[in-house]
Image (cartoon, rainbow, N blue to C red; front, side):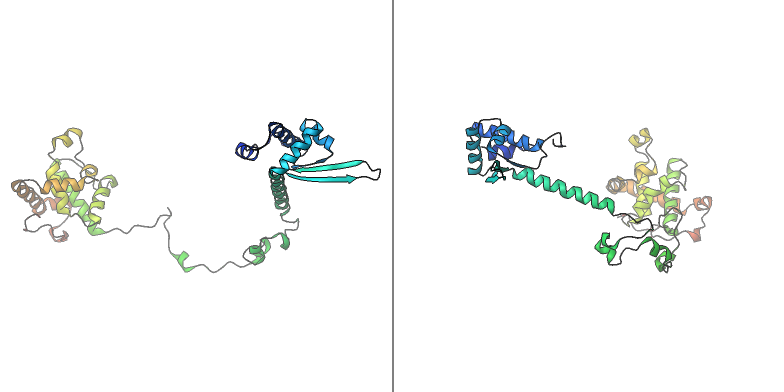
Length: 305
């Protein structure tokens, strides 16, 4: 009996192969397939006509007609044999072969031998490895045995590995003092206009401002203009959204465009507020002397673009 409790049935192939067969031939062929599977799923039947009739569960004449029809339409490979013993008794009359079952049996046997060889491909008790069981890459010297790996001296360190790496594993980020000073100015200007006390050292507030200034598309003057334009916005005030992560986030560009399109009188007032803040004594309160203030070009008398 076969060790597989089920059989693969490809109904598409069955309908295509048996479309020209008679009903009794289809029944004979289905019973023969199940018999082959039950006898070891080798896909080959060998025996006398009487045994074939018994396997196909039909009489002798129906068996011969069915076998001829299977051979005629090439549904199965059929070999008519007459092998007799010394006593002149007929032993094998016909051999019926199911091509798919034979192919699948060869694949199963190949996989079985491959797994068996993989299990044997282990280290010997003394730690040596059989060269015949090694892969071509290992035989070529790309892979070393455990002994050679232990006895071989350590390779010279690569110069690239000599670079100091941070403990976190992340590359260190260089701090731009000028950029950080501009971020401080924007946050302090926001605090002066709103009366809030946003922490200058909080990354949540500094990150969006740094992103706006780093790409070079906006300046400190632009961000302060956004503050002048949006710090009196009733909607943002009602929601408590007058804060750095909101004003200088993804919508900062649209806020700036809206501020630039404001009436000229309002723009002049915004610019005057910003110049007053820069030139006032708030620098002393921030701990920045006028001489130390970075010259980023925004304290100019040119009209706002």
